[in-house]
Picture (cartoon, rainbow, N blue to C red):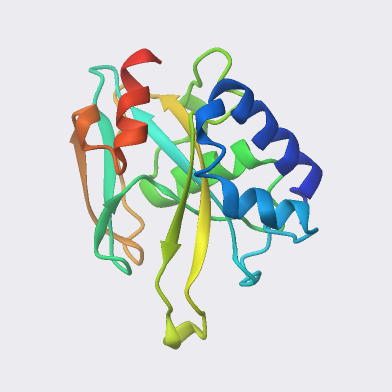
Length: 182
């Protein structure tokens, strides 16, 4: 995989420099990195693994959410890392384009957030016997991107709807609190 554990550690370090009060929330990820696990592989279930997400904001300050079929929840565009991803932020841009059809060419990251995610959210994913996956956590590295006049074309196998919402509708209160200051 092109995304290395060293890149992950450096990104987490920059993130905690910006958001030091979130160290406890990131504890499962930090423990995995300290014990030498490689959470960049979606097959790492000894704890969990990393995903990449896009916090998409349009030119009227609305947040894009998609209705995820498998989890039956409104979420940010995002997903698992792939072997040919050349960086965590680039994985978020790839997922943005795959799931929404919004080209990464027009997605602009705010100053300072091009190397540091706006949010890292660690959350449990339920077991999926159909995929032979036990319950595990995802550490979703989320980057903010502004887009102008986006045309959304959903990836039908993963999403069944989308909505442009107020920041208060973000998937977590922690993220919702950060968005107005971007």
